[in-house]
Image (cartoon, rainbow, N blue to C red; front, side, top):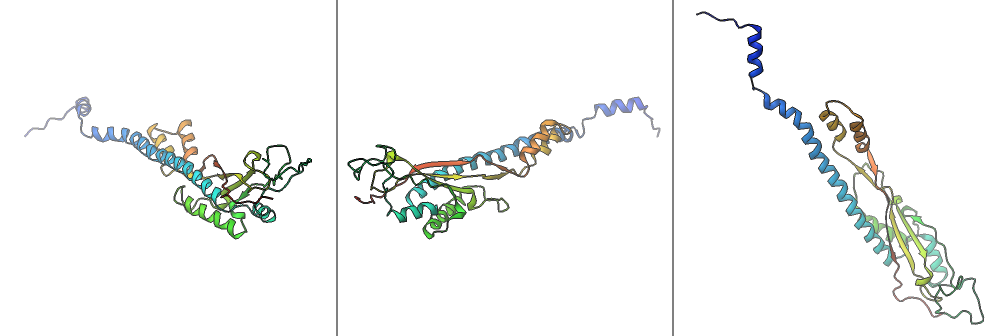
Length: 238
């Protein structure tokens, strides 16, 4: 039997016509792009879900705070000192003014307690702690709950603002209640920057920026909601 030795040129030409393994090469090119898009959809979908869930959670937190005892000890002390009612302010005239006068009638008709905002972990009064605990328990099921995240009751801020239009002299103190969730953490779970660099056949400024954006914990903007407090028809006639 005679064997024919092909020339190098013929071997190269035959090799160039071979399609064996072409699918693997195509897969190697397309796979990083596919993973980048697929995992990016998952992570940014998680981001959108948590954003929407937190917006709803802070609205519910404000509702709880509006109908529960104050979460700020300073407001608890003010209400205890004045029997939960609006005391007289600096304004006086011949008529008193009378109890039942709207606090917006003139400056100083009612005393503005100017309660400073307080953090959820600062509550010492038992009723205040109960309000914070109820809100915190609810939030556990609504916000990103990575156990390694730096997020606790100190990330909750409560504000009780005096609104003259909503109050009257001798009537129940009804504040505008604001609950704020601050510095809510979120962590991407996919190596999107590395996949972008792989798809681009090397690190680029864009892939480096994506790595920076999706590495470690990131912080949402603050979420807050405000509702008027409920007086439950309490108060006194003066």
